[in-house]
Image (cartoon, rainbow, N blue to C red; front, side, top):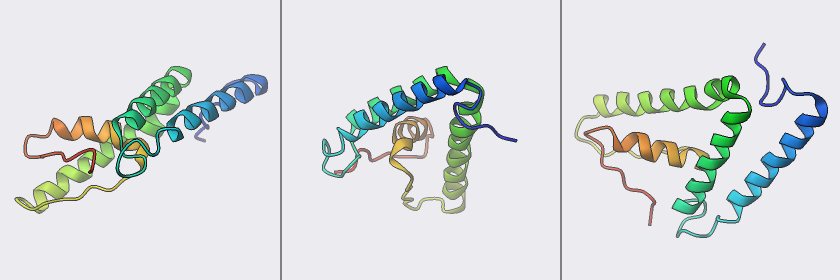
Length: 119
């Protein structure tokens, strides 16, 4: 069975890590209005990247499945859409926490012009 982020830690450590995760989320939300569209800013992305790097340092195996594998699936779906709709515009919609990764990954796809952050 798949374990949660902090399931491998003793209860007192899980509580400490949950509290730290809540602090990361609060830091993210402090930036919600720094762009013209809520949670669509480079500040939000920077903190989010740091949050997921921290999570990966706590539970690398869990985060590789829970987070990183999902990103590669999302990227492949975009590549499939590009191939299926060659020459057309494609709008990619996803949760705000994926912005930093998506932005970086899509810039490496030659036929993609990334417009981000949105204005």
